[in-house]
Image (cartoon, rainbow, N blue to C red; front, side, top):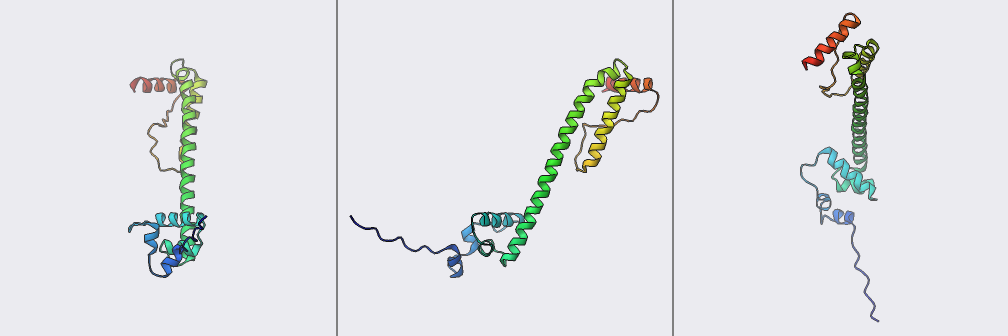
Length: 168
């Protein structure tokens, strides 16, 4: 049985970079117009694959490991804030849908049946929606959620609601 020769020693990417045979951008296949976020993300991925900070920094064209670490931390913080804002927006949408269903449930009683308690409930629920949107501090146009302020007696309120519904 013929014995196979040992495999040739393969130089690491870092050795190739140190010898000047390749550049970090050739190894990582980067585009010239990498944004800071893309570069930090790729550096983070290299770290997750087991590269040291020094190796990842060199492969992503950071001046040193410390600079790479700071860039990746900043990237992670920005991502966390963005995820947090998206989560808050999803929760707000869910709560607005729930309160819309409550309003729809009592709307006919308030407008058609002239039920004062139902009208008060609808008004309180609309006010609650308004407070939720204000407190969410999300730059979002909530065109489907309008707050109407109607002054007068209970009967005037119900009459105004009826006119609004018939007019829309």
